[in-house]
Amino acid sequence: MRTKTTLLGILLAAAPLAAQESRNHEVRRGDTLWDLAGHYYGDPFLWPCIHQANTGLVANPHLILPSWNLVIPAPGADCREGGLVAEAVPPAPGSLGRTVFYRAADEGGPDLQLEEGALLPLVSAREFLAAPWLSGAIPPAERGRVLETPGLQAPDRLPETAHPHEAVYLTAAGAAPEIGERLLVVRYGREVPGHGVIVAPRAVVAITATDADVWTGRLIAQFDEVREGDGVIDMTPAPDLGTARPSPVEGGARGRLLGFVLEHPLPGSPELGFVDLGGPAGVAVGDLIGLILPERAAQDDPTRTLPEELIAEAVVVRVSGASATIRVLDVAEPALEPGMVAQVLRRMP
Picture 1 (tube, rainbow, N blue to C red):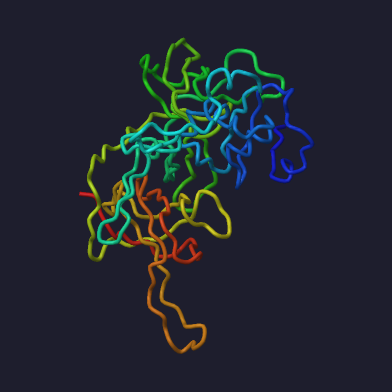
Picture 2 (spheres, one colour):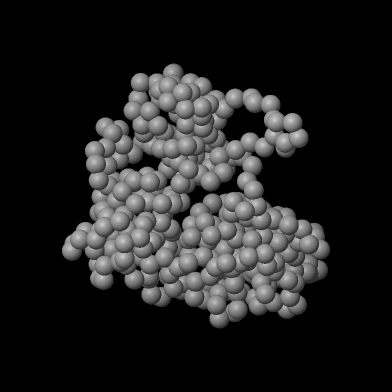
């Protein structure tokens, strides 16, 4: 059984785990690489050690999300000797003094711009591939399942957990893939009534060898933990949005907010959720969706009716059948609830 590290556990720890081998840490709300390095190594300036061991999952070291499973490398001199220790280095003359937290526009990730006062994001290929979606009535056909990770495991590491750049064995199902073909590792979540189950991508695996019953692959991109039994399906290529930006539309298609990937009382930015607006409604990746509070009686005077109110904006990061996955960009009021109106505000060309 895996032991989850909680914030309380960190605060009560008597000493850093200096004598431990590499281990796993499930990210909790409020965690940072700085704090994790301070806890596990006793030196927060060693946070690059953790970042370098998880580059397939952590694209931006400033942002780690709850439920991510991070590898904590065994503490030692490797980080300092390898020049990974975070140090205060003065910028070169004339430079901007950017750090590893800086992400250039061509490195992927959301590209937020202002035009007529609205957020106009682009969706990176990584965000598209990592975004969960709703399966609809028919779940995706599986090419196989994760069988196990080759090699020996550290004593305190779950043997069924794989990590970035590791090789994995896959059970063969159907026609063998081509060497180099990329498949998507997924895990199935809860059911959303009328729209199937949540399909959550975990990683991209590139096939390196194929035998009759077992295929071998290597994780070339990872979005979350990969375990034995996870499904393997064909990978849908990410759309090339280029420099296009969504344009305002009048009377855009309307639907409903179906819910969020993570269920909790106060969803907000950058939560991922689902709307029942998909291909049949002409919705595409990059479209901007408004979440609208419906007409309702005024609290002070129930005889008066308050008008509809736009309280959140979200960008479409994936479309699957009759539904779409959205990422919340901005929330005016913490009142996002399943069933509220979702309307297309801007549409990609």
